[in-house]
Amino acid sequence: MTVPAQPATAVPLDAPYYDAPFGAAVSRFWKKYATFTGRAGRAEFWWWWLVNLLVNIVFNILAFATGGYGMQMDQTYATPSAGAVVVFILWGLWALATIIPNLALFARRLHDVNLPAWWILIGLVPVGGIVLLVMAALTPNPAGARFDR
Image (cartoon, rainbow, N blue to C red; front, side, top):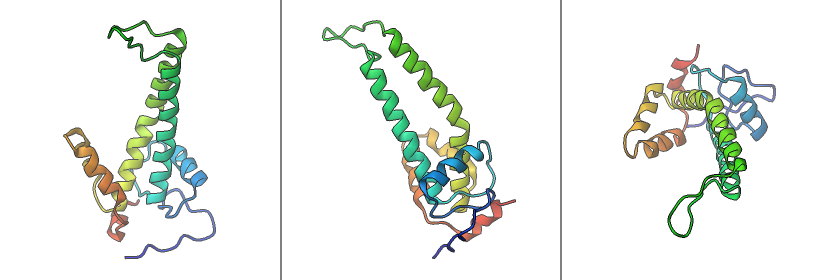
């Protein structure tokens, strides 16, 4: 099955953007902050997840560098430094700011493969996350247009 090529003009926000470039995918993520309707192309989905992964890796490195993981050699814990507390607060704010748009993007991606967004709940069971990743990697299904407005 082939997916129609996108026109050279800007793709409207209510349409999936197949083969979205990096900048467009990130921009569309923030513009469609809490939009659970419609569809999202694979590139739109995976570019954002790459950005999110990199941001979380940076926070993890910063937390480690500032003493946020205070395990000592004698298996006791040290009190985290003030810098680590700031990193953890910023990391928590990032997580809170992106949880709704992450769920919305996942819902739109599932819609593009013609699955209802309720499949996100399978992530709550063991190995459900792997099932969700496989679903997100599926090719677009034209029948998913039923989720468009």
